[in-house]
Length: 202
Image 1 (tube, rainbow, N blue to C red):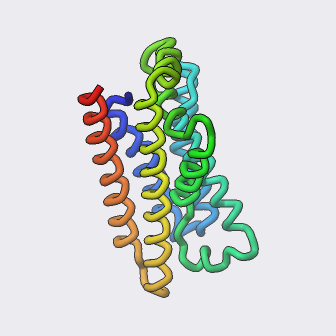
Image 2 (tube, rainbow, N blue to C red):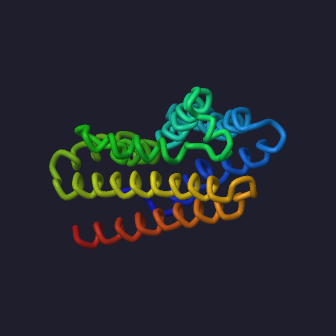
């Protein structure tokens, strides 16, 4: 399982830095350019990670894919309401990807955990593959985590978009940030607690 401090590092790199860049760029460059700029910390981190360990961070790749899909939605004709709300769909898109991956043999959280373990120790990912095949409880826990994160991210995005629409012209920035950080903080706290409970039971 993933060490607890990894969640903090992942949160800073994949949530805090892209959000800070997006908010800094939005008033000056518009929604599309701000979204593109928010991808720069992820690209830089993935580049450094690859040069250092010949490894690509799976979570950063997923967030980058979410930004790309959000940009595609943004430039589509029916997305005028999204441009007016000035809220990206990145977390919602990632949440949908998490939920859709439950239909696969191995959901997204499996690949996130495997990616982290392979970075820590060589061939550790092979041990994780063996545990996945031999421990049904591990497979169930990974699927539960995938479902909880998917529902949480979709719900967080829906709430922020709803607030942006209801405020109608007023800046929902502070409330949107509160919802984002409370949601991510709650999901990380639940994940750490659930991980410890799983280890204790095993």
